[in-house]
Amino acid sequence: MNWRQDLGFDSETILVLDIACYFMECFFGCRNSNDLVNAYFEAYGKWATEDFIGHKLSWRMATEIYYCIALGGNRSDLRMWEIEKGWLKTPPDALAYMREHYWNREKNVDVPIPAYDVGDGWIQCSECCDVWQRMFGQNAYVCPNCGRHTVIKENTNEE
Ligand SMILES: [Zn+2]
Picture (cartoon, rainbow, N blue to C red):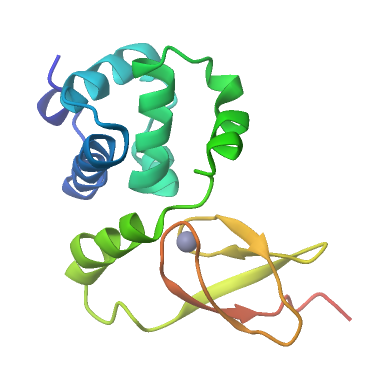
């Protein structure tokens, strides 16, 4: 299988995965990242849709593919492993790479997008659905997953 051709992904999804390959090479020392992606889709193709990939984005696809395929880890243990390794948040170098090669290919990339208050002191990015902790008095944040600039948009159903 060749994931770039055989899965019918759109160009944006292929870009996200190409960058994930780059991250696996840079951060995890993988020399066969393309083979790992093929093996990943052979194993997990059912739920790894364009939407799924678009929400996870390149860093999280890289950690998931590396952990599940290269390390042979169980997908249900992925989050614990990410926490242990400190890889739950996208590393600054990876965010900078995303900004240059993914977000900055679009216009107005630095125009803030909404982030929503989801309760219990957490806010959620409207682009990638990542959540992070809200800080008192701060309304503008850089999303720790996708690196977009966000501004909190309050829920209108709160009193
Ligand atoms: Zn985001």
